[in-house]
Length: 395
Image (cartoon, rainbow, N blue to C red; front, side):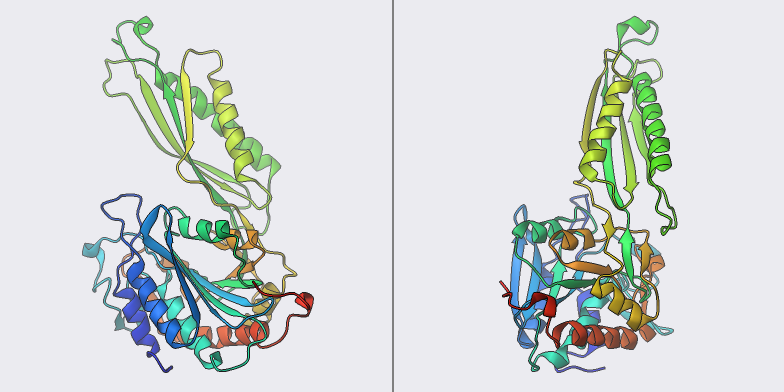
């Protein structure tokens, strides 16, 4: 399992050893430039054209796009460089140590998903001196675990990538072409506080939020009756009431109440349309009151994914793995690549039940099958011409 520079397990350990936590809490948030630097050096040594682009609003974070070869079509091997925060007291070994024990390699990001980059580099190394008919691209993004800012910047750049993509999120080496979208929204009801002995002295925001809650739950029922997708484990859209806070004392009229919700939408449902509908229902619930509603997203929202079953990347992955492409319950950056015309699947060596957990690990037995699979995909999509793009030119 060796390549010219460096050996695969050493690469995985080197990636794990460079912390790259992304968090909504500024005290926990870190740069990912250490990971990007490693990848850039390795890929430069392999002859790739490497482009590192800091995020406009966070120069301590960056994306990497490394390209080998030119021409139409092509294959993107993609993933995110960040991890979630961790509680070191719950780990049985160094979260950044890459400890090997019992056929497993332990470390923060071992499964989700730094190891994929090392396996992708091992897979692509033999092709650096071969004449590619279509380009081979490695994409590494920032802040997938929080804002998806890295993937959004790639999509907004307007620079096309390859025709097909494999996103190496943990799927146990079974391909997925579908997942739900995600919205997280804040609703804030504003009234005015006063002494609880006389309701006329204030306007109770908690009572207003009671109306909003009812309206949102009614909307959830309507959406679940209208939209269904049998291929998913939970085949209907979900709306979770995740956090609420209002008031400060039982003898004061509540002047403000805030609610956070999580909505998981099905393929075919639109983030902007849902956001408009949510706000309209909440406003209607307060229409005959003297309360004020504020509504804002906690993040921009992740669209759902549905790559067509007839896509060449889906059919190739199914043939090579022996599994029909299904759905995953988590969100990925694939919808942003699909928006750019890069048909994407989710397929990686880790297991989702290891993601975001203490003592996260990658099973070492997954390394060789992953490398073999990626090489088969590279040969399919980079060593042969793309007839559907005959006559076109790469950017």
